[in-house]
Length: 209
Image (tube, rainbow, N blue to C red; front, side, top):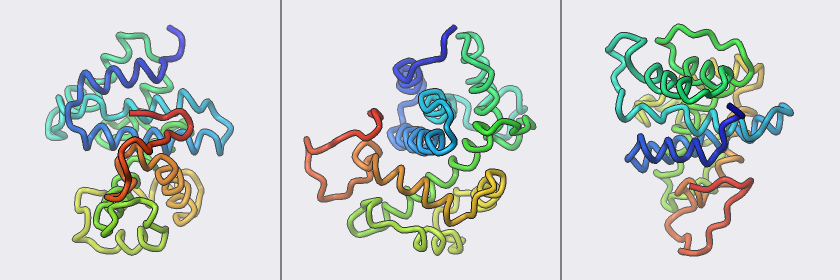
């Protein structure tokens, strides 16, 4: 099979995932992965697809209490492999969950892990703003929210820190890369704010919902 297209990945996301917030999370990770692919000189489309698909099975197999080979993301990866998806994407998807035991050997894998939790923290930081706009979020604010243990409890701060370290990028710089990517795609991600008007959406870098 040729590399999967974004259209094929998005079709799987819509088939397997009904939660709008989870879909938006996958779009956010896609956006971050595209930004890093450009930075690293990698395949922007393939990296974007890896980000978009990484949680597509989570709604059906959400529990990390089950055996690691019978839950998210293992079930999803089985489906991707049956479709002939490249191992580079499958390994990256498996590697973003600690409990699979799959090492993050590739740059794609390390980047997916580094972006996953951070996009959630940035989204939460935007939604508590009066404007509910990611454009009003800055790096210092995200760092401050990281220190607040009561904020966005579901976000694993250690993963954010370890992800930046694995990329050998200073944490503030890493936050900045992901934040700017999400700001550029704010309309698509539902983070343009309460004053955004219908019909004004423009989709950067070919990313749509």
